[in-house]
Image (tube, rainbow, N blue to C red; front, side):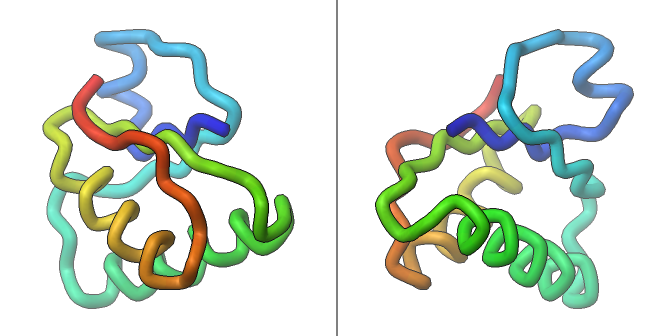
Length: 83
């Protein structure tokens, strides 16, 4: 499953097919990180423990943070990085 963490503007500049779009701001404040954690764990929980995830964003930073969140919760992250 591909989760696209880019903003709408970033997706418009470089379209990439994805299964789920979660618009995460470029600047990851502590509040945004907590919202991101809750959102990603909710998405992962809805798809079951055996689902694997590909994560992408524009620079790779948000995808790396997302990978740490999901892997830390026991989910499989196949790849992450910039799109």
